[in-house]
Amino acid sequence: MNADSLIILDFETTGLSPDNGDRAIEIGAVKLENGVVTEQFQELMNPGRRVSYFIEDYTGITNRMLSTAAPCSEVMERFAHFIEGYNLVAHNASFDKRFLDSELERISHGYDGEFTCSLLVSRRLNQAAPNHKLGTLVNYKGISANGNFHRALYDSQMTAKLWLSMLDDIKQRAGINEVPFALVQKLAKTSKANVGKLLANYREKVAS
Figure 1 (cartoon, rainbow, N blue to C red):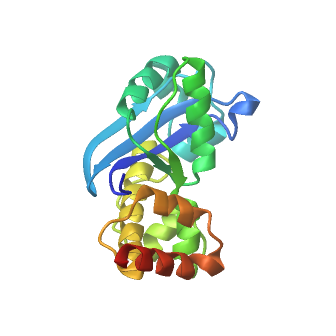
Figure 2 (figure 1 turned 90 degrees about the vertical axis):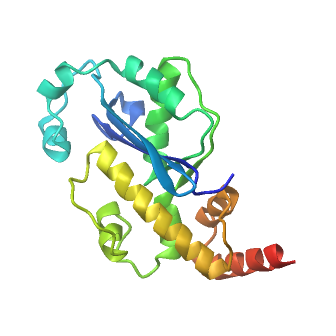
């Protein structure tokens, strides 16, 4: 499966870790098909507890907004169907994967796609970037932005633009027309010093 047909997702949450009892409060995602956004998903979800003032201020998601939202279980049931059959990407994927796994486990649901991380891929490709926060990378790559970060759908939309830009970089550097998802997964785990070698070897493999 190619890396331009997948789902890019982002969670907003009550805190940093489901292991500490934190829950999801918003999920946003975009579906890419051959590099084009074909569908979007966004829902607030009621975690069954109040969120802190810090989270309200950080995300703009208030307790009043969450009081009328569907419970996590209902939203995650819908989201499980949305991602069915697709590979997944998130910026700092270890964070989002923990919450995805935790919320789906609560409803006895799994998913069949594989995960990779746009932040790790960026560290390999954009080694001169000041840092690899999403907002910084959007500016660094000259990507147009006109919304508020730390809301799930907007972050997913910006990650999708960053992702497609990085796929173009891979195509150019490896001299290829399509980027397999497996290649990006491998790139995310390759040391920075060996990125050029990995792409050169892939170019030779495709040419042979």
